[in-house]
Length: 475
Ligand code: F6P
Ligand code: MG
Image (cartoon, rainbow, N blue to C red; front, side, top):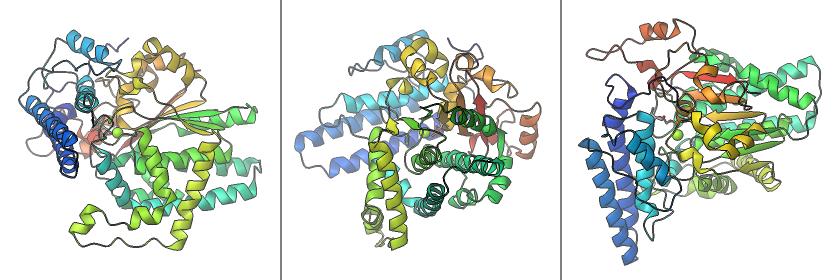
């Protein structure tokens, strides 16, 4: 079921696969070791402490194997139904080593392998080794969070007051708002933790006004949002009773926050009546959403003063006292909390886990391997796939010619699949499709590689500065 187009490999020195394996993965494992070390030091149950030390050693061994380009070892059986799947594929690949293997498989294996050290333990089974980093980054995005909360509150209050006015002018305003919400949601993806990108908070802030949004649109190389809007508008005007939008989530923290802004907006505006969120089942690519991250976000919003004003361990070390939250800011956040908690309680905003999202394969396999999930997604008006990894999985992480149509590159999930796919992705990997002929070359020409760098590399696509928003009508 996989694409015949060759996948990106960690052996390809001109690709981000190689750079990731060489530079980023060792850092990610080291950060996990540091986090665990801290938790082990704080722990006073001796059995748990001993076990924690053993896990630390296992992680150090994993880092050693990676850096010494050893063969990948089979995933140990921790009872997960996906173990056989990972191991069968490893065997089919010929049990390669870390620097000679398809990038997508290997990176998924890394997180699944990390997870076994915890899942096979007694005391650390559900420990999320990336949780600290996720919370810390969310706290540091405070200005953007507050700004958006104020804007969201005004918007929703106004929508409730105005109701559905109808008419061409109203339609146009609705469309602009939809585009803006989606674009905020798109750029929220630039803040994942597995790759700190060049996009600063100021950049994100600039995307808020519609004038500024227009200016930033030049970095969106493909923008099919209009097509997705038409689908939602049509379903609404046909009076369809249940109009569902799915979001295959990417990162926790600020990105999840903007995903909820979009979800809340879709429900408040009546463009959707149900939003289904799809989280990951194990700690994944550092910052991806686990069900617990959703609960943590809501609880931060429920008590913003406690969340933002309690000094962190780092604050204490630096003798820093966090700035207080104003009454207005606290009220804006609590408005969000009430809105989202109510939508959640009323079953309009729900989470649905599936271990498929942490399988090693691409989404080309979805229709044949996960029939139930496929059927489920067919009932959605639009399935939004957030972020870079989801895009890599949609396209098989393959070395497509960049002018290949998106609908071709997503194979069995394309036209005829019954699924309307919308990818919102800031580019952080080599694969990119749907560009105009010559567009890749044009960007390469303005983004000249430095001295000694490989001119074959599509480096512009690694930094999160550019984005693609691609739609495929599958119905
Ligand atoms: O390209 C760097 C990288 O870590 C990839 O390994 C992965 O596809 C991606 O970034 C994760 O980003 P996102 O959170 O947007 O999926
Ligand atoms: Mg991610």
